Image 1 (cartoon, rainbow, N blue to C red):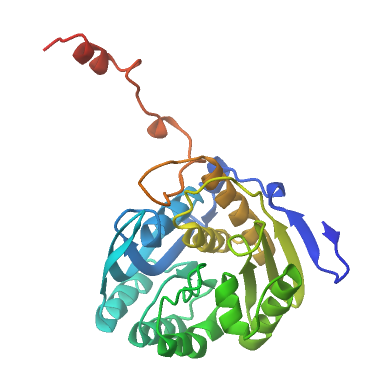
Image 2 (tube, helix red, strand yellow):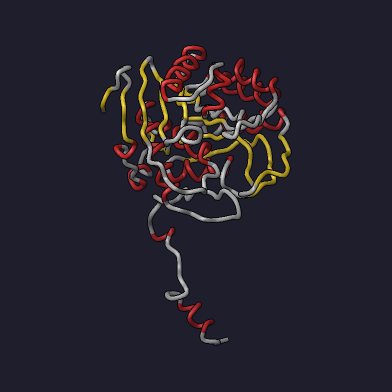
Amino acid sequence: MILNAAGWGHHLVSQYKISASQDFLVMKGDKMRTALTIAGSDSCGGAGIQADIKTMTANGVYAMSAVTALTAQNTTGVIGIMESSPEFLKAQLDEIFTDIRPDAVKTGMVASIGLIEVIAERLKFYAAKNIVVDPVMVATSGAKLISDDAVESLKEKLLPIASVITPNIPESEVLSGMKITSEEDMEKSARMISELYGCAVLCKGGHSLSDANDFLFANGKGEWFHGRRIDNHNTHGTGCTLSSAIASNLAKGYGMNEAVGRAKEYLSGALEAGLDLGKGSGPLLHGYAVNGKWAEGITLETSDENKRLAGGEA
């Protein structure tokens, strides 16, 4: 680690090595560590609870989900949203916490005040730990994703109980009230948000600035995580993936800084794997680090069945 003039630490995320075989052995007593995602469903599987479950599984924890909304979408965009009722979301959370208690919780896009209030109330009621809030409010394009009233509810109800908040730059601007145009602005904004809500803040610079560097402010100290800039337009679900990877590592007992570093390294690998599906911004390859015979495929050249069919046999 090196320090800059402001005293913040700098790390290359490549120092945090991911070992899928080791992670699957991380247990609590005789039980596997567990993580819960509270988010919407993405019908094309690249973001939302689908990305979260894949990420949590790849990072060696047992994944559970409480669905806030169903979406009709693909890699080119969203055409419809059907929101869960607050009562049904509460029922999902109660069933989870009274049976398989999560070691960490990640929240994603929650578009209405009623759902935000239920999540905050239930997480406090069950004294949930390691709460990672991805405050999905503003797209990296700057477009608003939830109403102003919902933003205020998020600020009042959910952010104060978070262990870490993971805003992109537009969201950091909303939460801190300042314009961000440089890494120095990211540092200042993260510190302001951390002091306001009493939790760690990871300000993500990968989309709005010219690099893939993120700044974490936690426990009164700042640390830069320098990621690899990967030339890949298939970035659907990167925010969901990062926040659920952080939750997975917190569930396994890693400290905040190491959890973020490992999550960043995992995300870089999923991007670098180069999955190319769909007509728009495609998904990541969440299972790139999951090895073993169950992940192996067959090819036209190696499959006896395919050889038989290619030869015209009945």
